[in-house]
Length: 180
Image 1 (cartoon, rainbow, N blue to C red):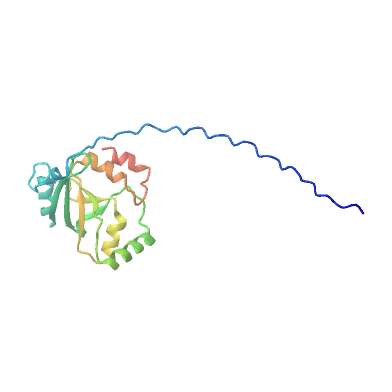
Image 2 (spheres, rainbow, N blue to C red):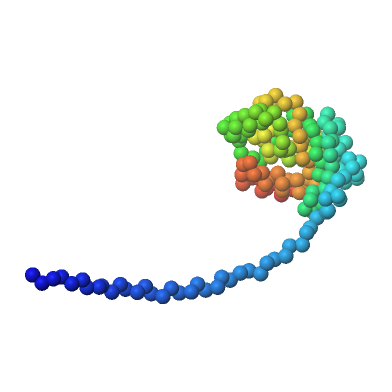
């Protein structure tokens, strides 16, 4: 029997790897700072841009807490506490989700802190409206007597903000009701 000889099999040489094309990088966009400087944000409660809204809060049995300019556009805003019965949900939002309210009430109740003011506007009839109905309802279920609000004085802008409720998407009718 003849001896077996080992034959070496040639391995296929891998195809040379293509060099990756250099990545195209976008030129860095330099963003210039906008809005007021931090030391320019504070407003006095008697500032003409916010004083009438602060008076409305007092007339409703609430208390103005602070006034300031928003850090992006410099627009006046009022942080205020209101009696919880003086604030209502907007008419152009979906029904409250009981599961969402229960979750919020449990979280707020556990910490015993309401750290996220509801956005609100004041109607001509003296009512205050908010799109943040889930947090409002959760606070009511917890028995709160008051709620902290971030009041927007410009009605036209306020309706746009109310329509941007991120807790629940607004219904299609919101566009027509928010247009004013």
